[in-house]
Length: 148
Length: 148
Image 1 (cartoon, chains in turn cyan, red):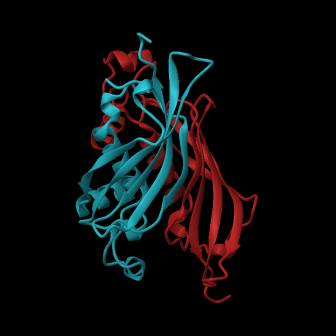
Image 2 (cartoon, chains in turn blue, red):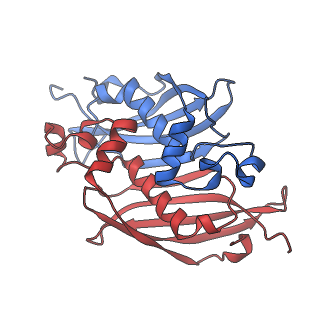
């Protein structure tokens, strides 16, 4: 298990590739973002936008999964206070293979609750053509190693 | 259909209530955020955090659905450049009924592409006990009414 002390500013954590399937784009859109360009490839607005694209919230959720698989499940995480500067930079389409990395931007122990701290990271996600599709800055509460 | 001209700074758009089900919290977590406190009510970490809670990304996706149902599906939207200052302020738990509103914070026509503009909004979401659970600032590209 990784604790707050196991992270350092500037550390790069690679994320494993994730293939985005059309069926998942449509399923997510039906539940959470039923705009035509996330649901219906034949729609005129979809065609005008270059074809079906994943909801930006779907992409964000996929990136969370990439982070959980890469390191969060093995880290003493608590909750997260929030997200800054989420940018959707290019469409994510069916068949795209997303990859990227999370960079540690700050590690700060909390004075008010000394058993935990805030891990700040910036994630950068590209597709298989090396086009940057999404960046965001995340914060997570992480426990300090109990023996310290 | 609503176009950019149909929005004004300060305008408040009410969102319809949305009930969060345990089965949906667990389904979302399995797919996108399989940390124990989103998946397993019996886990020790979950108990320490006061019980099962929705992934913050699930809450964000639900709020997108509330916005789509309230007005985005009837608006000439294009894509979104991104999100600022997303804050998860309190846990969202099974059975919670989320409600709230979106406030228009800016309406700006693009000089570079005069057929469209940027609609900026700030959404505030509370639960059934009037506790604020999430806020975020969104931007969306919206078409200008063609006849103008």
